[in-house]
Amino acid sequence: MVLEVIYVVRHGYRSNWVVDASTGTYSSSYPTPTGIPSDPALAVYGVKQSQELASHLLALNPPIDKIYSSPFYRCIQTLSPFTDKLVEQKGEQNVQVVLEPGLGEFYGLARFDHPRPATVEVLNRHFGYLAVEPEPVIVPSTKGESIPQLHDRVAYCLHQIIRQADSDPKGPRALVICTHAASMICIGRALTGRMPEDEGEEDFRCFTCAFSKYVRKSTGRQDEVQAWDPQVPDSVPDVGWRGTGVAGGWECAVNGDCSFLSGGEERGWDFTIHAEAEAKYTAERAALAAKHHTDDIGAMQIDAEAAAMAAERVATAAQLSQRSEEPRLDLTKGLEQFLARDGEEVDGA
Image (cartoon, rainbow, N blue to C red; front, side, top):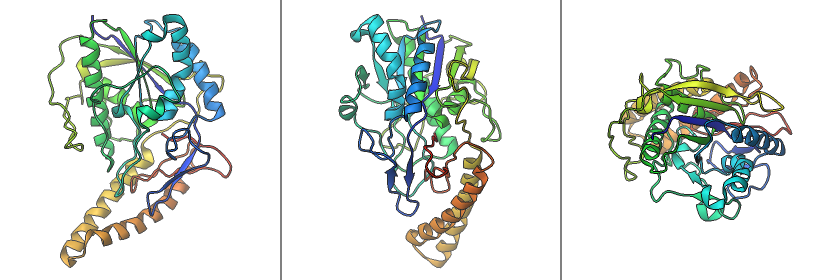
């Protein structure tokens, strides 16, 4: 038996954090359970959403056989009401949440190290039923990734997860993945093979605690691909997903459903501003590099000038974000800038 269905959910409404664009220092509005400012818990409203999501997940057919999560706190917490109920039904020994870094957060490109999730030792203090594979499928580079690199990272991660499920002697039919907005969009594109020319196209919906379902089109054998090498983290093996989809392709049967949530669709997200900012940033960096190569000025000055440009673009992105109720991320330097009204908790990716 091979895997037939993949369910995908986004984490619930969470607490906020900010980052200093000049230093890359993250800070949070409230203390975080893991002590990592960029790893917040769900807001009270997000906990309510997760409870409503749990009821929906428990009623699915086919039922969920395997559970995967981004290793960030908010994703594991979103699954907790579901896993707690599942333990009551199946017993603790039969429930595991597999933490996979390849399903983790997207930070864009930056000149400083991106945040890492907490270790499993820390997370075990807060949650039960956690499992970590001896070797993760893939770990995002600490220096970040472009939007195309994110898509390839997610596609490779899915390829390996599906391969593992297909070879599992227990024969799981369905699995669920809890992840972030950017990754949820990429999962839809990687599974269906549909990559729009405009990265900001609103194709796969990712509201807080939204639910999507993908049904496998083909159960043919997957092609072998080169394994990801942690010594070269920026090099992601190509699984040939564009145009066909991972593992033979999948149909999107449910796209970002929120009908089971009392608040309905909230905090939608897309790549629009990110794609625009990334393209502009790439062009500016190329121009600066060419200039300083001629003038023989080091990379430190390039970063200083690029940071000044980034600050200007943050203000521009803030103005653009007023077109939508959704807080946006600015990716000009891969900095997670949450553009929120005073006193309001916001949710990004």
